[in-house]
Length: 161
Ligand SMILES: Cc1cc2nc3c(=O)[nH]c(=O)nc-3n(C[C@H](O)[C@H](O)[C@H](O)COP(=O)(O)O)c2cc1C
Image (cartoon, rainbow, N blue to C red; front, side):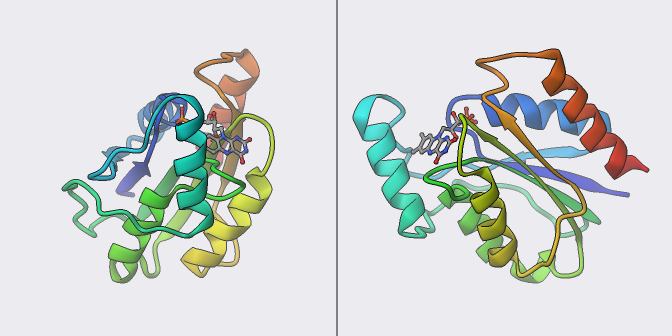
């Protein structure tokens, strides 16, 4: 099964998780980036990112390669204001046709709350009932733990089985 891990990460937690999941599922990593980067520090980081997520923005992305030949897509996103991140919104919108009928899983990184709401919003936006598998981790780069590694392994095992 040809698998892609499509992810956005501002500060590395989602990226680290994406790399681990890609290694364990033999997936191709596709990192998406907004053309105009969000502020990454201080008050502005939460203000602009949070506002953009709440508004349902679809920021223009830098070029990425996604050939539609993948059978399975694993989405990775931080939780922003109890939602998924705007760059992922753009990606899904730009690839609706290619995503139709694919197996879809998701992992989300957050610092404590709002992940369940974000999962529901992502399912709604993808127009699917359920993910093939889903995973929520709390700041796994900033707070490494064996428990996170086990959760990642279980997520990948359920996908590989
Ligand atoms: C704009 C913004 C909004 C956020 N909103 C939430 C939130 O609603 N709930 C939460 O638990 N964490 C929230 N966070 C924290 C991130 O989801 C969390 O630190 C995540 O692990 C960051 O992933 P990254 O390092 O891949 O960017 C927010 C972070 C930012 C920058």
